[in-house]
Image 1 (tube, one colour):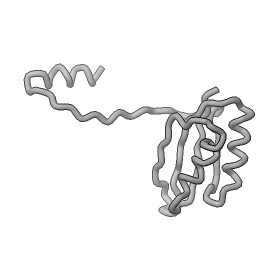
Image 2 (cartoon, helix red, strand yellow):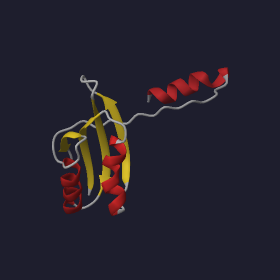
Image 3 (cartoon, rainbow, N blue to C red):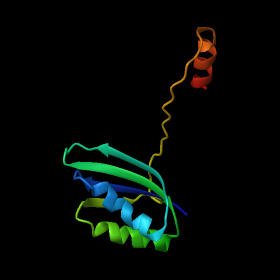
Image 4 (cartoon, rainbow, N blue to C red):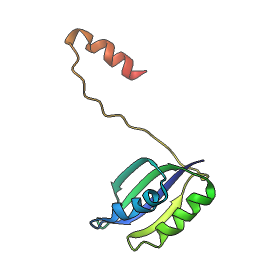
Length: 107
């Protein structure tokens, strides 16, 4: 099952590596990872997506909560949440084609 996990994490060197370590140790894959600042400059929000059984993800969650760097954590898989994806694309477009590209992006 796909799991969406949100983690509040201390902004310390190596904190991200310590969060990723339990996944690597178990051979589990992190499909998506995003880190963003919060209102507190000493804390960042890390959002990750992974696939695994509820039991396996539960064990990983327990390991993560033991880390000193982790302030708070929530498995948002079953709760109400909003998901968005972002694409950043850089392309050379001839002037003659620019209108067509703009039209396609607006769809």
